[in-house]
Amino acid sequence: MAKALEDILVLDLTQVLAGPFAVTILADFGADVIQIEPVEGDYNRQLTASRPIETQRLADWTKRRNRRSITLNLRNPKGKEIFLELVKKADIVVQNFSPGAMERLGLGYDILKESNPGIIYCAMSGFGQTGPYRDRLAYDSIIQAASGIMSMTGFPEIPPVRVGPNVADYAGAVYAVIGILLALHYKQRTGKGQMIDCAMFDAMCHWTVHEIGGIIATGKERVGNKHPWALQELYETRDGEYLIFAVQTDAQWESFLRLAGKEELIAEKWDFNTRIQRSEEIYPVAMEWAKSKTLEEAIKELTAVRIPNSGVTRALDLETDPQVLERQMCNIVEDPVVGAVRGVTGVAPKLSETPGSIDVKRGIPELSQHTEEILTKLLGYRKEDMAILKREGAIAQ
Image (cartoon, rainbow, N blue to C red):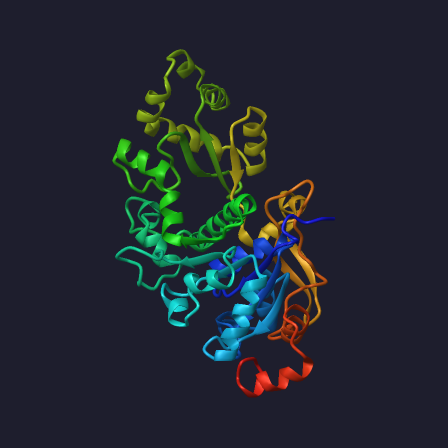
């Protein structure tokens, strides 16, 4: 079956999480991704080298799958020359070095677009290529703190809390993909490439618009599991499980009161603002109702009257969750090194005509696995040139 990006060539210079995750999305949908690593291997290989081999392979199935691998020393004149030759063939370059790093190598966007005016160049970073924070080093937790996400996470009586998953990395990745697809569409119309300045900081700030409105309206920054515009809280059920549900619309309000045996409040006709203002009177009612039910009973009753709800699924239970299985979002992949690898992240979103996939045949590349293939078949180098390039330090031995 055809894939949406199967005619697109991507040069991948990314490392750690945000960049590799973005490129994996492109690769899942068919892009021919050439991962360009330094001769000693990229930082991710070094980062996981001391971990059990099974853990290494699981990380690689998320960050390195569906790619080809080539090693290039970009500080070596010949390595730099080869890279620019690849740029002439490519549609997209993605990198997430610190701002200015590619320019110091003599490989910034201005140089790359001289080799290929149609190149789409995505520069991912923590804080962006401009601004007073430009040169600050950043990881996910730093961006969560700087963007305001951390200040609104947790409970009012305790210090701010980092969101569990690396949401800044993942958001930065998704916005990078959005930028790349927008640039590809523009290139189809005009033939012109462009630079994408994608900051994790921007992505996280973009995600706070709705919440900032709630903070301004209520004066409350951290509300735990509550919500400024709905009656929402986490409750313990009779069997010791946890349940969250949200009551927002008039229909949901009346349905909940009937479930809780508080029909007399329906007659009082509390409007939306009254419900929010008097919410502290309702939370004990909801707590008592939840405590009288098992989790299964509560979910069944709430679902029947169309009140949004869920139990709290433990992360390790996702691989057996029926919805996760149906959507193929947590997979077992047969790995040639360690055999079955559990917990491999699936493909999103789902496309009807050009769906993405985990290409088990292509798999995850070993360091420099495709160097000779790429140089000879794509760039026209001779096999005898390989020894010279190795001797000159342009590619790995």
